Length: 229
Image (tube, rainbow, N blue to C red):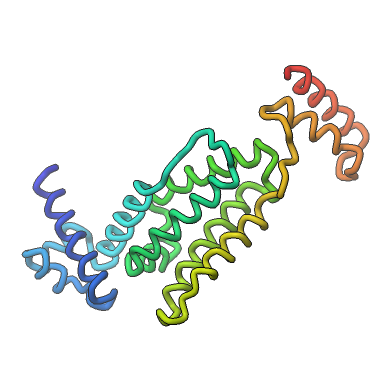
């Protein structure tokens, strides 16, 4: 790590320490510079301005969160895997309340590279649910529901007085998310494209969206996919 990178990280660490101990209002350029053993102009050279510093702190938070994620490319129980991923996100937020609040305070901060990497992990989890016939809604909507419920759960928990924080709140919101995005039983019993093709082919007679010609063409494609299994 170069001297500049080391100094930059020292400033970020100082800002996180102030944020954690004293709240966001305590994170001024002068206070951070003093805590890092630097002069205030150094903050501007490294981060541009205070918002640039806060963006860097948020990116550090997203990177830490990404490192906490556990990824199983082929979980034996995809619903349990979904719950576990939600719990990891909630636990991170409850363990880093000030940092979590800063990370999600402004939509622009969720454009960070680490946030996007975390979303790719989430989309992979959702894609496995879809492939197994578990997914109730479209994949992007599922990601939005999962993300919104865990963020809302953490921020609501943090807004409550400590004597009113009931763990049942977190469990209820997690289970509401599971119910919203998944079926109780998989719509596809067989793994892979062949099983999915058979399930979709069986359901075609119940829909009226496609024309007769479109249904005929789709059945031809599905028959070819089903035959490969």
